[in-house]
Structures are given as C-alpha cells and as structure tokens.
Image 1 (cartoon, helix red, strand yellow):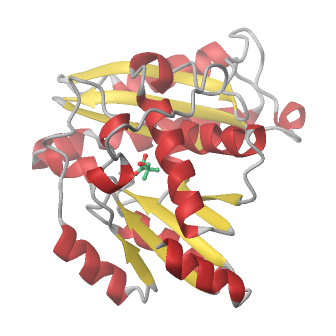
Image 2: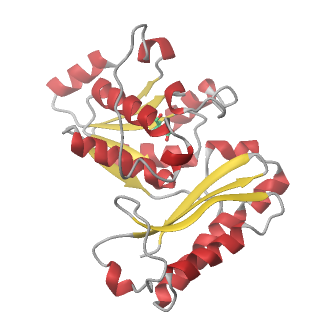
Length: 281
Ligand code: PAF
C-alpha cells in the first residue's frame, strides 16, 4: 500500500480512501462511488479493527466476508482493496495511540464504549498515512465517528479532507449496516421504529413549535414501541461537538442556520444494537 501510494504521489494523483471493516453493503459501495467520482484513485480498506471493540462486544462474531467484499469492490470498479492483517497493523511492540479525551469523543458512544474512539482514531490515522489519501469518505450513519475523525484531523494537522456521505437506507427506511444481519426477520421489522422516529422528529422540528424535550420524548416513545427494544439514547445535539441542546429550547429553524441540529438514536432490538441519526435542521 505504501509503495503504491508513493508512486501515485509522484504522479500527482489524488487518492480517495474508504475505510471499512468489510461485510460490505450498499452503504460502503456508495462511499466508493463518491471516492471514484472525486479522486483519481479509489482505495477501500477492509480491516476488522480489534482495538475499537470492547471486551464484551462482537469482535469475534463480526462478519468476515473477504471473498464477497473483493467481488463487490471489483464490481464497483474500486482501484485497490487494501486488506492488511492484524499483525501488520499492530506489530509486536505497538504502543502508540491517538488519545481522544474530550468532545466530541467523550459522550454517547464514547461513554458507553470507553476505548472505541481511541481505536477508531488510531486505525484511521494509520490508514490515512498508508494510503497517503487526499480525501477519506465516511458514512453519516456513524455520525459521532465522523465528528471524532474530523476533530482528530484538525488537532493533528493531518493533510486530508474528511467527507461525510449520506446514510443509505433500505426502501422501508432501515439504515443499512453490517450488523443488520444479526437480526431475525421479525426484529428487522421492529427496527423500522428508528427511521420512523427520526422522520417524525424532522417533521416536528420543521414546524418551529416544539421544544427539544418534546421532540426527544416523541422519538423515545416511538423507539420504545417494540417489546424487545431497549433505548440507550434518543437525544438532540448540536452537530459539531454533540453537545446536548437545552431541553426547554424551542426548536426553531431560523436559530439553526449556521449549525446543525442532529437527532441521534442508539437502540437495542433483541441483542442487536443499532444506531441511526438525522440532521433535523
Ligand atoms: O466505520 C467503520 O467501519 C470503522 O469504525 C472504521 C472507520 C473502518 C475504522 O475501523
């Protein structure tokens, strides 16, 4: 990867990187399409990064579908599939980490999954360096991840542009995710409550008549409907640092013209934890 990147640099080629953990789906392929449209070379990395999984998380169970991933990348005309091994990414003696200590990393996913963003920030910085990427493409579905990576790039002066790309959804509304395959057909049906809640939140926000608490309560009610749902959070935040917005504030479109108001959800349906979000204003 490094040798190819050095060659592209000599040829003045721009490189678009799509970091993934494999189990590729239409969401990932849309990122490859953006990279191809905007850069000379599109690289997709496939690496299930052990350092971003907590001890009780699904690292062992995480789907590994390398042959199918390569086929999908070929069909999307991705120029390079970079598939390093754990020993290449974390050789013996590895001891240097990107330590993300404050906003936007220290809340929500960062609080519930304490080492998660340190693992993400470290691995993506290594991938940016290896591919010498001009731009890197991330899906909005992991909204907080995109903000953490943007902050890291700013703080460490990494010469790369981070591009946030729209969430890709199933026709019924479910945000596409590699973890959707953990759910039964009945659970998949129940999981539609997330996109339903976000759609309702957007409608309410656009009226300019509801408080932050009222909108968050409506979302919470909708995602609590399935009997085996348990809600980690249903919250409205300011988009850059994911700071909570005061509950009594009335959500008025005119007050959100130069910043984003974002609704974030994390909900367990049975044993599958799903996240989803929408920019309301
Ligand atoms: O979003 C993911 O799949 C991962 O967190 C990433 C960005 C590939 C880092 O391992």
